[in-house]
Length: 259
Length: 106
Length: 160
Image (cartoon, rainbow over all chains, first blue to last red; front, side, top):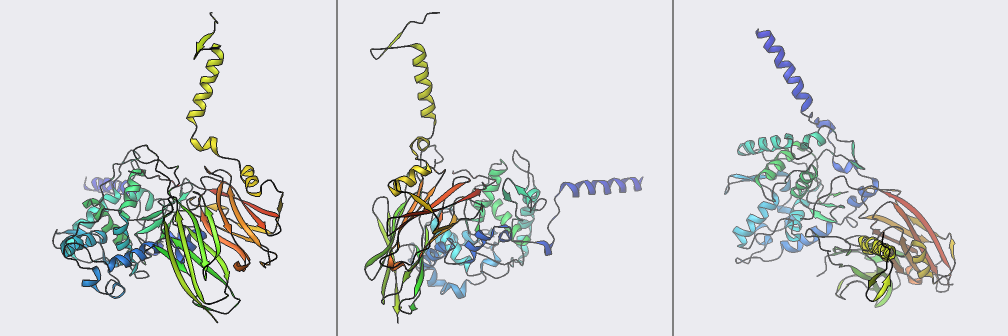
């Protein structure tokens, strides 16, 4: 009898492993950059052609601009971003002591604004917030993604993995269905990439502007006909946490260009 | 201040042909897109881009909605004298943005 | 069946005529604005050259044959010309076949340009032909055409 249960267990495990897309092996991981045409790659590779650099430029200006009732600049506390912000983006999302939750880079910038500068938070996907986030993340370009090892992040990261593997929407697809199970194949004319968040915020030709990883995640949710989580939702940050762990060691490209 | 990236070589030899590049942050809204409420998003484009060298207009372009968002241009100039190379972008309502760079010709 | 005339705005109009007029009206109003207004590629080129002959050659248009996203397609137009005071390219114009408007851009050059070469990024609404026309200082026009296949994004995001 025990042997029979064991057999049933093996069959169940086999069925499950077929249903759940197999994760990409570490050596087989590829940035979305690798899936683009040479023309789009060239657009990203040259800073004078890369439109994302316009947001880096704006972020550099905003870094020096006094804001809020406190009237302080980012540089007033953090100094020269090219020194102090180097490598910072590789560790985000990080654990936020105040909310006892993970917080992403844009969330941290807004938290700094409200607490330190005593200014209104910047709207999600506003040019100013994207510019500051892009500018800070750009300081880590070429550095490996090294997610924070804080044990308090573990349950949130687990939730992110669960969300990544959950089928949602009228098309009943999970993130994993496409990006673990079918990357490299085509969806219409577009190649399905592995979904590594190496270049965010990035300039997407489809958007004709720079956008955040949260915008991209919401875009995919709309694509599978699901109700997307709101900007800033805890679930989106948990997903970001899982994605950065999944891309551990890959190099930051911000600002990337994608079709 | 314009959100623009311009690229002009700093020092060149007289008579040399140099490439200059200019890109500005602008949505180049075509006027053909529909917003979430079903109404047309009004047109808002850079209509004219011009480059002056030592005060003389040496290159200019008339633009239409088919020019991409955050318009980018690369073209060449003959390095004649040291001076200012200035770029001007003019939108649909006549508002202008400028950026400039110095070039030294030896 | 009664086939008598109907009185519309004081004019006598046959029933069939009225039906035909109504259908045409419906067709016209259901088309997007630009589908009616847009001149053809050739008409747009003729307007630029004011009817002058356009010759093949002396111009090269580089356009990627396969485009991932039509919102930003890099193009380069180069014309063979010594670019001297007496012999140079005056203007380079770029036209498209299927966008809502046929004109893309007109570049004004001269002897101070050194070379007749311009690069930019353009929008292509769908797979189509793009034409570049150069006007020389002697008044002649030269052109080059190329076509691109434009793939559309798989997942469209709503604007809200």
